[in-house]
Length: 106
Image (cartoon, rainbow, N blue to C red; front, side, top):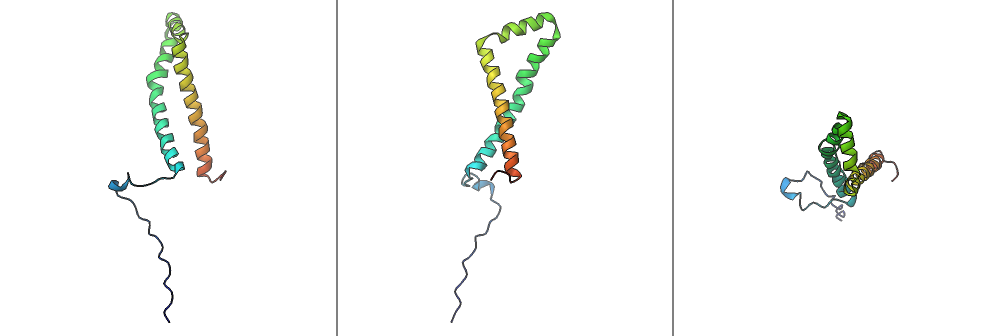
């Protein structure tokens, strides 16, 4: 009698660059990539938006009053609120991903 052949196990190898678009990531993997992209965008927004505003506000009393007048605008308040919310949300999501990487909360 011949023995039943064992089920062949799949082989996992590194994928080629041409196969990246066909590769199916789980939802957590896609969210992790989006989290990294949003972090890079927020990091780039810091020196472009917030640091010039801060620098101008501490230069002199006149520039502080000018910045205070600028921030009184509802549109600017909305943009700053969006940036603050984005930073806080990104921080909390980062803590979540860190906990998942440490195999906590699964």
